[in-house]
Amino acid sequence: MKPVWIIDDDRSIRWVFEKALGRESIDFRSYSSAQEALTALEQELPQVVVSDIRMPGESGLDLLQKLKERLPDLPVIIMTAHSDLDSAVAAFQGGAFEYLPKPFDIDHAIELIRRAIDESMRKGATAEDIQGTPEILGQAPAMQEVFRAIGRLSQSAATVLITGESGSGKELVARALHRHSPRAASPFIAINTAAIPKDLLESELFGHERGAFTGAQAQRRGRFEQAEGGTLFLDEIGDMPPDLQTRLLRVLSDGFYYRVGGHTPIKANVRVIAATHQHLEQRVKEGAFREDLFHRLNVIRLRLPPLRERQQDIPILARHFLQKSARELGVEPKRLSDSAMTFLATCEFPGNVRQLENVCHWLTVMAPGQHVEIADLPPEIRENQADTSSGHTNWVAALENEAKQRLSRGESGIIDDLTRQFEKTLILTALSHTGGRRIEAAGLLGLGRNTLTRKIQELDLDSRQ
Image (cartoon, rainbow, N blue to C red; front, side, top):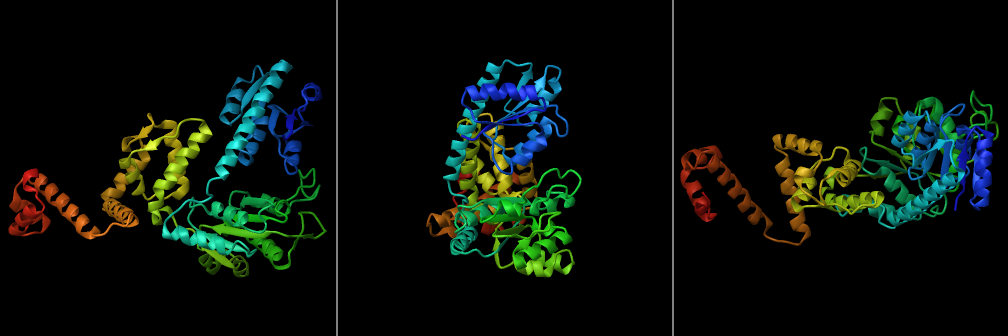
């Protein structure tokens, strides 16, 4: 088991915890500030964190936010004074496991820590179960191409550039490439270059020496160093600032880099996988991206299709995400009705797989019953689909999905059956609109009266008027 971390600027509080945890034979580490703990996080991971809320420098709430970004399942117990009710509420909103009001009973505190340890161990087991499922799901031909490419690259250390829209699962593909490579036993380190301010990105990538800049109180290992022997995934590479593009090119070219403020070259034994949702060739033409770096990254390119190009995968993805959300929340998984599943399968999902996963998580929390109907879907999904329908594309998507399903079942004679249903629907709708007046309905449909009468007889629609 990993150690319990105690973070408090009050030495006496740390001493009380150290003695109590020692008596209980619970391994621990104690730190006097949030920054000290965050620095230690580069070397070791905690099982549970107990942190004061008010400390010099970064507060316990700032620390909580940073820990949750990096380790979302880590239980964090926030210690608060009785007057800190607002802070306690903020702690829960920030994802705290529990808050411990001061002054506290140490036996109660230890009991709370044990509960947090149990929760952490249980979530760890759940994460392993999830990892046991396929990393990427998909039966669509476009996804099968991606799977084949991952297989072909399984013995390669080549640099890979993954392109695809936001939310399409580029990091999942990068993780799969790492997991099925000779470097699988070494770290996989991911960084979103667009999410980190320009003035921090260089230190984040390459690390820094103590005193390299204001606030650099200790040496820090960068992502390249953390990924030593493994894989570094650079997401949204198209947004990397020009000066850092130059530094990255140098690492890829000669294999060495320097920490910020450092003078000793460090050898990089790292496989780089980059990803972008942008058209890098266009960025190169615009002068926003170095052409030589583009060619260094573009050794092998994998295009990840958007969800609208693999709509037949929506049902298996939806079932997977509903089960995943149910496991995470400790509830029974919701089930989509056939009509709700068909409806979802015709949605375009501009946010791609990530948006579908969010919808399934929303349903797990918000849908009133275990059986989900169309009316239970998030309002924005239903409204967007209504807007799409007014653009005359929804029925085409539904037809395409129906055809794909029938073809996958090996059915034949599809065009005759679907054409028959298509004509039935159009004729009955037109007759309903005209109040049964056939001449008027024929004119609206662009048919002669006799042709309409013949089709009504062939389709056996007389009894349905």
